[in-house]
Length: 145
Image (cartoon, rainbow, N blue to C red; front, side, top):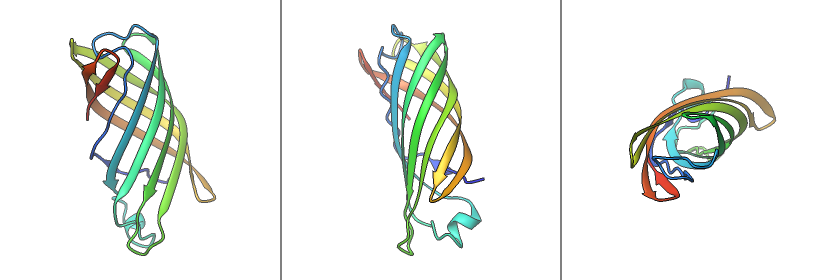
């Protein structure tokens, strides 16, 4: 099974229409960008993906039952190599997000997705799990790690 960027930590930005405390619309659009590194010995070794990994995602969430959201996720990654032959991954999948208001300006979030991942000519199943939060920046915008 191909592993998406294993350590995705650097900077993640989330756009959350409806603000943090309340989501007046059932639909929420989210985006993320990040940097990390591969941890698999095969990916770092014989594949040579031993440098920075860049990734991003676009998600559409539907909150039919608050605080649970069903999500459609499109994601991609670009994996630099000191050998000069980068790797890439494109993903399309579905998932669930738990988005719980903690304060008027803060939401706690947990998400899990399963996807089909294309890398070169290969199609592989992928999965991801994330924990985080979002902080209100404006009435229709939030950001967080």
